[in-house]
Image 1: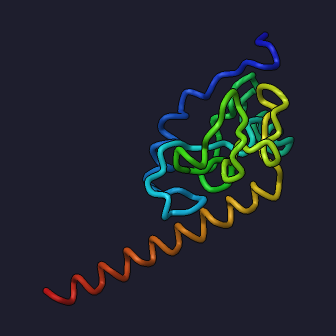
Image 2: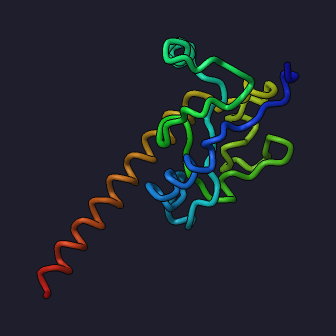
Length: 146
């Protein structure tokens, strides 16, 4: 069994990242920061409810990042600056790995504090709705000119 400080990402993590970056191509913290380049987990370990559902669906818990992440709930596209970290933590207050908002407990126990988690969830869906609505409206006006 792997030690508490080691774990591996699920096989579908790259696909999840691509889908997340397609849904929200800009930094969740602030789209003015530019393009999102990484997808950040707010919590690696599956919640007790997700573990129970996983067992019912024959997905046994292992020492991996779950592989069942929901972009906009568990993981968020952000820019390099907002994801700044050195050995898991950051001294920059605007980083999601800032020592006051990232709990470095080892391996799958690392997580963001709930206040930052909920703020990221709100910002993500707010910006997705704004960007998607803007694209839709832009496409309506562009069609009318033809």
